[in-house]
Length: 177
Image (cartoon, rainbow, N blue to C red):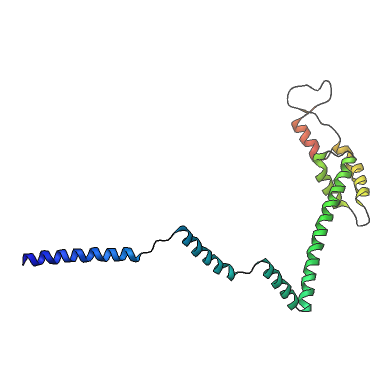
């Protein structure tokens, strides 16, 4: 019995060896050229799924030709409204720049130009133009903004000019002097 078991074990091992050799022979190896061809075929199939630039352009033309007159009109109206809003915002920026340039030419400090332009614009009447309103505003408010105030913090370094304490300066500003 022992011999038969040994013989069977040897036969099983031989069969397993033959099976693995057959599996190895059945497995196919690919060269780089074979892989490149397979990848290229796959890419061609994928490319066929999507339109190229020329086909897209033809589709857009076709789509435009299929629009009704109302759709065409709506598209044109939307584009016109977009352009009008762009024009309006550009004109506002231009007017703001012109106003700021005008105020700078009148001697308003560059740091205060936005403030002055805002105040003058808010005080304008429908009949006034900006220049007239700016002239009136600058005449009425020139004394308040063009004075130099020296505030004394304890050291008298102003060489004979009258100085105000911090509290006096705050009170004067609150009173509008």
